[in-house]
Amino acid sequence: MSLSTPTPANPSALPSGVIPALPTPLTLDRRLDDAALRAVIDRAVGSGVDGLLLLGSSGEVASLGADVRERAVEVGLEAAAGRVPVIVGVAATDAPQTRATVERLGRLPIAGVLVAPPSYGTIDQRGVIALYEDVASVARQPVLGYHIPAFTGVRLEPATVAHLARSGALSGVKDSNRDLEYLQQIIALRDETDRPWHTYVGTDSLVLPSILLGAAGGITLAASVAPSWVVELVAAVRAGDLSTARRSQARLTKLILALRRGPFPAGAKGALALQGIATPTLAAPQTGLFDDELRDLAAVLADLGVPDLEALVGHASKEHS
Image 1 (tube, helix red, strand yellow):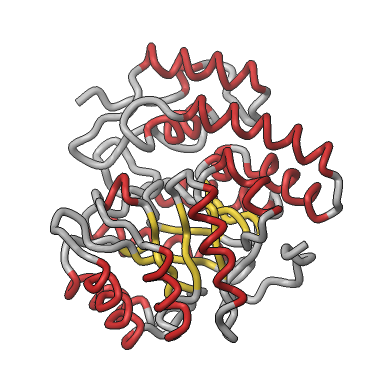
Image 2 (tube, helix red, strand yellow):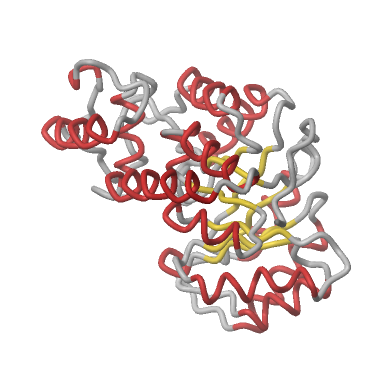
């Protein structure tokens, strides 16, 4: 089994196991909700997660203003307080901004940067190689490639990733394309480099098969809503208890399917609202779930037995703009 028993946290090392992809809680006027972010992190760390991701797709990195992004990293690192490693996501529309952001993050005590290819423009595989080699030249932490073509329009082809793994420009990949065939090819690259290689699955419904195939762990959204569920799943795999692991995976799959509603990540933010942690507000111009949608979600989550749900849906404040 590639997934080792966890050791005391080393904030400078890339984690293995359960890494929640944290939503970025916002106030109704779309400023960072510092208290809510601290609460999400404290619950996750208290549940036994192995690391945290700030400003991934679940954190609406590409939709937030620079001031909110910077504040989210500041508050997130303060809340984590070195208890678990923190990875920070980077997403921009151009390569110079991507490079500059990675360079700025190099001054911070984080374990790695998760870098998405610039979106909107067309980038071929030679461009992908040039991007990550350029980013790696200024990075002070390990660089992870982010394969999420549904959002970026760019594929990180296995041959391209292999080149970047061998050159040392990439230390791993997070794959959010729901493609086990692709994931297996990326996992196999650990045998083609003498450097540590980390493959993370970004899809909650594929955590179990991915780990069994050798993935380092999962960077997933549902781990922010029910972190103990994902911790239990990974613990069962580590213990070789596949019967429990299968049941845990089935429950987790039902949860992530329930959260797939509204503009992403409206379902997860709605769940955090129903848990009394944050508002369901999304970054502009999107709006979160409305009261009737929150009631529907509450019924589904309650039926699944999701922890920490508030008794009344009305506790979830909603912006209707």
